Length: 118
Image (cartoon, rainbow, N blue to C red; front, side, top):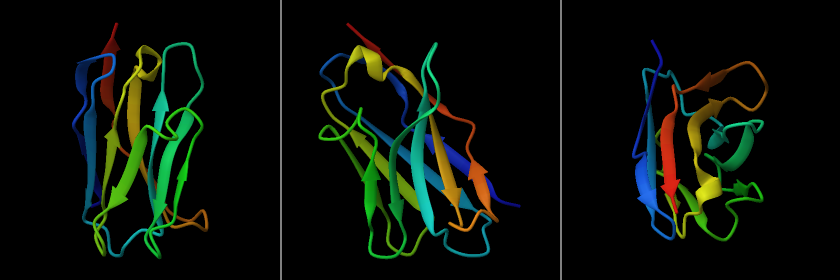
């Protein structure tokens, strides 16, 4: 049984930093791509960042580019999101995603809350 575990969310003041972690256990293979998406109040779900298993190619959504860094433990289904200079508008539930790239497999975590206070 595949299990997605996210951690690292919490309350932080604007300008602070947080590091999110996501570990997937029980998967029969390494996922082609893993990443983070977020859902803020009154907003649609948006891409934060993704990273591929092969070559470590990463993609960032506009909001976090330049402030967020996604990384992956090589050969493992485990990723991190280091967030710097957090802003109030970064407040959201952050969801971990893992997929096969061809649409056949797509897993989501339960989400971890990030709250940035002014």
